[in-house]
Image (cartoon, rainbow, N blue to C red; front, side, top):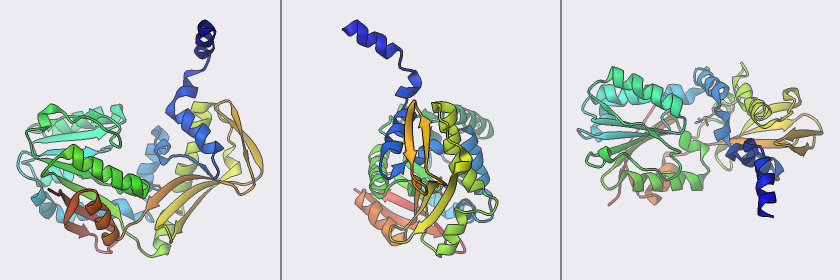
Length: 323
Ligand code: AVI
């Protein structure tokens, strides 16, 4: 019997056992259907996101960069000498470089990211450009427990979480992340974090419905990825991008809506869609300074300073660990 089970398992393709496959099966079987935004970022998705950050309608990246540029000297006052700067989900090091330029006394840079290729490449380039800096990349999912390099324990620790990535977490997950970061960084630590603010609904809706259709391509790319990696047969012409601000929940919701009644195959299974039925692919939460502060305090942080852009669209905050 055991031999039979083993033989059967050997024939299950590895792909079906991947987290992606399991999440697609669970998400497309759920009511309403949903998929995690973390699966947007294959190579093509990461490139499309880079394109989004340069769109005229997509203000968050531009606003955050303007805050870091304008207020770098004040921000780095919260970074003591010889600090280990720990960036959660680093991707590109562009924003960290702005802090490193303003605070050459930062002793170590610890980028934590799941994608090892980009992580190691960016780390090597940073090391070349800042030869005096100790660069200690950590390959890990920063939303789960991970170990900091031992060399970090003797240094003051400052976390860095730009990009309003926290907005893509459900509020309970955002609070859990902040609590986990407080624990990971330890007593006396600081966290410098960027998040998007509530604003005119027209501005919000335009940012996620750009005229050039890049956000639509970014959203639909998830179906291309399922087709390629999980043997899917999604017809992209039969789905459309939807994004709108949900005022009550203070979030942009992104969906992929089925244009007609249809049956689609993926991961060796069939999934039925009604006409107009959607797959909920992303939430992007918008905070008020007060709502963010309340969440940060609940997670063990004390807000000590905040900076915003000229339009008041985006906020960068410095938080200090309580106790
Ligand atoms: C990565 N994240 C902060 C972006 C956002 O605005 O929520 C992802 C994105 N989705 C559509 N456009 C950009």
